[in-house]
Image (tube, rainbow, N blue to C red; front, side):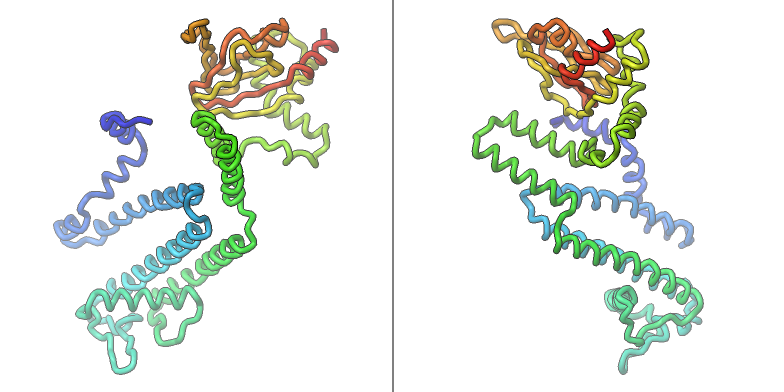
Length: 367
């Protein structure tokens, strides 16, 4: 956890969001007036829409937070999506009306509007909130395709936009209905993640596991969810020969670079590759501990790990640094001795592993 403002500011300034956020904060309304109310300047306001991406990130965090009810979070998100789309459409409807000269405002949807005894002629003089609510009403009834006929497009530009808007609403409606159906019948990926996390928390509470172990378990499950990395069950229905080709395509380039296998035959490499399993580890996790009996051999695809020697007094000393194309566990596996040092993750890493029994079986064949 970094809490130094200078480091946080430096990291933020290096990110791609800083420049967009900086431009978005400019007083474009004031500049619009300074430059003689040119429409080209007012279009720069649309840069602020890019910051709406942060709202989607916020909702993604809420969905994964098991302390917040998932159904409530999803419903709020769907309501926000609907309001955002209808608000944008309302603004465009009003924009189409205001870009015509005042002398032709009667040829717009709002200038020609008359609800009961109330007329919207000279609509620019009407209260701004009443104009906004009228535009929002037009956008919502059009989106729901239940227009009552009281408001409709008048000129060609408005007709074109209504056609585009209704076509878009078909997709939006399908998205909203599909999500509501998924909430009712359940089974979404996020919900499965939340259910799994709840079961793990119950297990950890019941067994009173330490905080470090809790954090590692939670981090690993979250990593599985966010990265969607290899799930062997996905390939169970595929023939063994095809699974072997998939493994060769994915893992062979990495295994050929491992110094341990330098000069080995292509057939030997193939046998190693098709028995590999892929795993990801977060920084701070200990993969193997010093003094343990090891039954796995690991190969590093990317990431950085360190080998730590632990003295009798508990002191730690970094004995080596392992980077991509390195391997560890081979000393304990080949020499049948306890692991000589602890291996700890420094950066998010992707590893390939093969169990000792499979490895020794291959060695016996290709001795």
